[in-house]
Image (cartoon, rainbow, N blue to C red):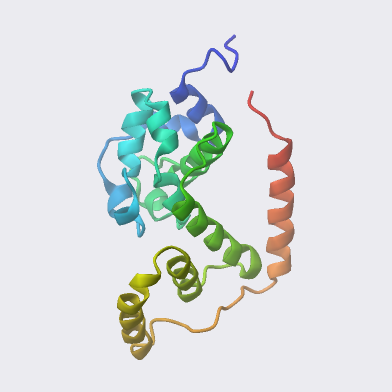
Length: 189
């Protein structure tokens, strides 16, 4: 029986991801990258990362900003013809990057933390708040250009100014707290 030291990088990614064995079925079709709203900011598409995982390019994968720009919208997962749990693989790669000490993507991690903060607080993302916080923190000079786009979106009623919460957000918060407690107990196998 293989121990965690005997497993390849690829094997560890598969083992640590629920449904990760589906990674073997990747056709390199590009549906994931083509449906990703944050794809333009990623240094590799998800399919590119999958090819790198197969090639055992552990350091390059774990230093990639791709998992950190994943907004967990599951568009890639729902459109994948092979039903690969792409978003879950991104979570696995984030965890592995942190454990390997490659948590050095301050912009991407801040974006991810801001997104998760809104979801934890309200049960959904708040695009205006997410974009504002992220760009004020990282790209303040872009705010003028983005402000014009925001005004145009407001005129078309496409950008709410106030965040909305889901019903019974306290139940979601209890679920997330339990998931965090379970994750804190898990270790590499």
